[in-house]
Length: 269
Image (cartoon, rainbow, N blue to C red; front, top):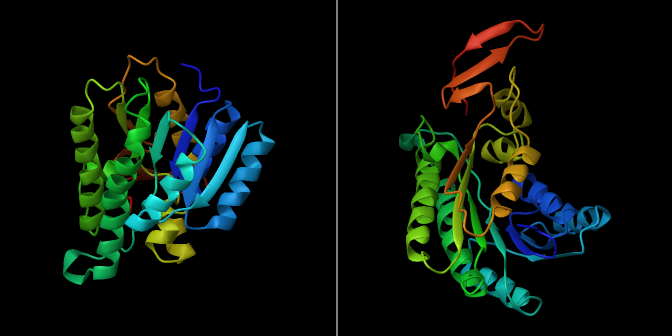
C-alpha cells in the first residue's frame, strides 16, 4: 500500500518516536497532522517534514490527558480532512522508578492518564474518520514493559499492559470495519524517555543506555511505516522490537569503555 497523500495523525509528535514517525511518514508523501503539548517543537517538526518533501504538515496543541483538549484537536482536524488513514497513538511516557511503597500519586496519575486514558480518548474521537476507510490503521505505541514487569515499574508496566489489552479489544470491536489495529512495542530506545522518567536528571538517564547500543527513534518509526504500508487485508497485530543487546527486561549486554565485554545482566531501567 502506498502512503502517498494518506492522512496520518500522530500524537506526542514533538520529540522521540512521534517526531521520527512524522518525518518518516512525511518523507514518503503522507499528509501529516501532529499533536503534542510543546507547540514550538511541533512547529519545528512541521518545518523539517516540509523540508523533506512532505506534501502537507500541520500541527495543533494536544494534551491527551484532557478530554476537552482531545475534542478540540479532533474538531480542528475535521476542518481539514474527511478521513484518517493512520492514527499513531504515541503520546505517553513514564515518571519515577520508585517501588509501590514509595510511589507518588502524581506520577501514577500521569502514567495512567497519558498511556491508557489518553489512548482511549484519542481513539474514540478519531474512529469516526476511520471506520468507513478499509485499510486504515491504528498504531498504538506499547513497550516490552507491557509484557514483563520489573521492580519500580508497577504503574508504567500496568499502563503498557493496559495499552496491549486496549489494542486487542479494539481489534475485536472493529473486526469487519476494515480498520487494522497494531501495537508496536519497543525495548530500550534512546529518546527523551529516561530524561522524563528521571525528571531531568541527565546523568541518571544516560546510565540507562551505558555500554550498550539502544534502539533509536528512527528504528521504531521505520517499523510504524512498515506496519501502515501493508496491503489492506494484512494486519500486523503486534510488533516487539528490541536492541540486539537486550534479550529481556533484565538481560542487557554492556561493554566497558575500552570495548571489552562488561557482561550481561542488570536492570534495564
